[in-house]
Length: 86
Picture 1 (cartoon, rainbow, N blue to C red):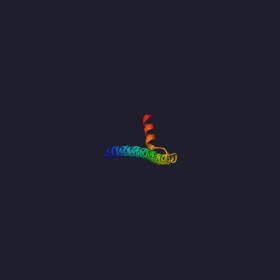
Picture 2 (cartoon, helix red, strand yellow):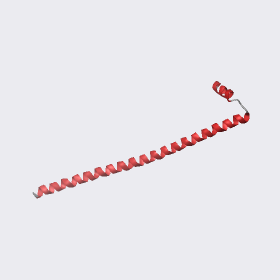
Picture 3 (cartoon, helix red, strand yellow):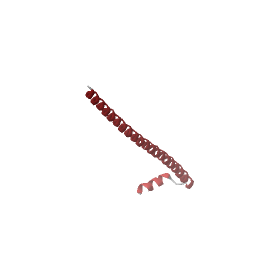
C-alpha cells in the first residue's frame, strides 16, 4: 500500500508540474500576443491620423487652388482641358 501511495503521489506531483508548465506557456503566449496587438493598434492609430492629416492638407490645397484661380482670373475649364492632354 505504501508503494502505491508513493507512486500515486509521484504521479500527482508530475501531473501538477505538467499543468503548471502548460499554464506558464499559455500565459507567456498571451502576453506576447497582447504586446503584438498593442503595437498593431498604435500603428493603426498612427496611419489613420496620417491619412486624416493628408486629407486636410488636400482640402486646403484644393481651397488654395480655387482662390488662386479666382485671383488670376483663369477659366477652370481651360485648365482641366490642359490637364487631360498630359
